[in-house]
Image 1 (cartoon, rainbow, N blue to C red):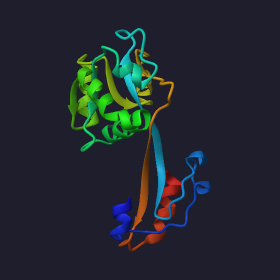
Image 2 (spheres, rainbow, N blue to C red):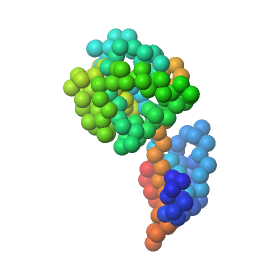
Image 3 (cartoon, rainbow, N blue to C red):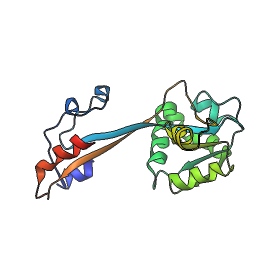
Image 4 (cartoon, rainbow, N blue to C red):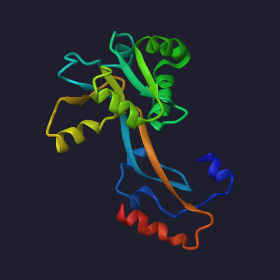
Length: 180
C-alpha cells in the first residue's frame, strides 16, 4: 500500500467504513485503500487425529506436532505468521522460529500446496484461515477439520481495494463497493 501510494498508482476515494458492511472496529483510516474483506489466520487440524489441540501459539510450537505453513515471501498467510510471531514473541521471535522449525514438515510457496499436503495427512496442523473448516462442513458435510482457538487471539488479514490513478471511470468504485 505505501509503495502504490508513493508511486502515484492509486487515487484518493471518498468512502468510509460507514459506507461498507465491515466491522467499524477495524478503525480503518486510509484515503486511498479501503477494506473489502477480512478474516483471521488459524492453524487447522483434523480432530480425528489431534484430540487435544493447542490453545496458544506457544503451546503449538513447543509441542511435538507436525506443522506446515507458507513462505512469507510468496504467501500472505506466511506473512501473517511472520507478523503473528513478532507480536507474540517480540524480541524472542528468532528463538520461537527456531523452536517452530523443529516441528516444520515443510514451508510451501502458497496456501493451496500447504493445505493439500495437510489433507493428504502429511502434518498435524496447517496454517490457513479460521473459516477453512466451514468449507468442509458445507461441501463435504464433515466437522472433522477444526480451527485452533488461541488464547492470545489470531492475526487478521485485511484485503483492500483502491481506485487506479489511471482510471477513465474513477467513480465506478462506488459500484464495486455496492455489489460487494
